[in-house]
Length: 455
Image (cartoon, rainbow, N blue to C red):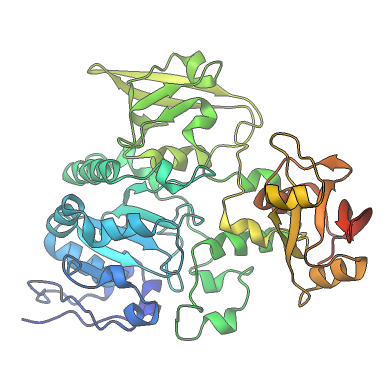
């Protein structure tokens, strides 16, 4: 039995079309794809979920090899993207990788399954999804057609949306689309998205530390998914094309008034009152089958359509199954409908300006010791860490801020946000070279200090 040679990360630059052109005609395909437990990235990233019993079906970080196997078997490709060092989604990833018998059976028997653990050489035109996710999946035909996406996150956390139950249903729906392909091409046509002006993350103009990242991948030297959004934001800032609308990526169905059952991915659990969905006549129990003509297999698929609409007056058509009857309802959206809490996003850290320090919430005991009386829902911060190695931290230190200082007011107003929201607030409401007024308690005395926001 021949084995397909392991193809390096740079081969991920190749598209399925290029692979087809390079494949020798009449070449004999192997009967099975070899499991490679010795892949260097497994040990470099300490990827324990890709080792041991029930993990043998995963092709590791090698999309061209997955395409070749999918062509040989006639199966669709199930690709998971996982940032191994990140703690979020760790238990869900373990279930998908080898824990769940249900997912394991589908992944090993019905799909060619690919585990992608870093983004260094990934073709960004082929793989378009919300890069701030800690775990994401795509279902793809070997010709590059996208059947669907899975993976949703928000300030409520990943566990609020992802489940083994809805992933199983998304996989079954992707299989149904694959079985009907290519006759269903029209409902899949817009699911890939326009080609990007760059090939891979390292080709992005805004990607920082390219020399370091181009070295051999290690746990502290891989291209994380969120770094793609970071690079986009850096480029927007450089071009002067930054806008708030661009930050409201992949809005939830809740933004148009629909709360989707996270254990199904398509069934409407709740219609929010006085929302576009309510005005259009959508009802709890309706199952979303298409949005703007695109076939839907999960919440992430709905987000994909909403992501490509403007944050302006717009319309979007939901096709639902209601008791066996297919109905289409058009929702009217008003400017600003995309706005959403982005404090959970990893890419928020690359926005400017930055305070130069990290605060933590003051405990009740600490507040009492300082004779501070916080209103319900109110906050006070202690500066836990001041980064004097950066221009921002140096500016904060020069202005008089020190670790363990307690911040009681922002711009002369009580604090009503947690530390992560504070960092986002500074980035969204202030500009580089602004001064942020903060009231602090230092050595028992309260004083107002201006924080210079530099870059």
